[in-house]
Length: 81
Image 1 (cartoon, helix red, strand yellow):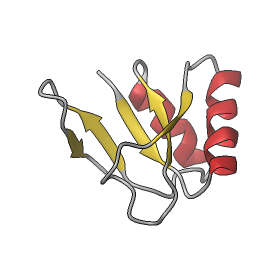
Image 2: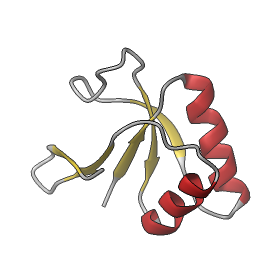
Image 3: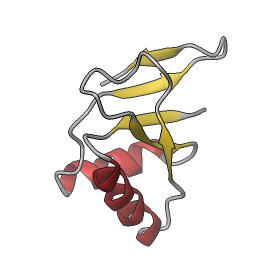
């Protein structure tokens, strides 16, 4: 299952993804699907595995500043946090 953590800028997304990668969690910076970004920045971190661990790590490092979405089976995104 894919999770998207919205970021306030491309730089913020890159830093967050690097933190996750250093911790052994695969993450990539992606252009956010249209309609998910309300702040103007269209970048997110995409995570397929170890989401809870990734979220907790980002929270501890004060790196989450946007909404979090989960991609549903029908292809739509549901906000989860």
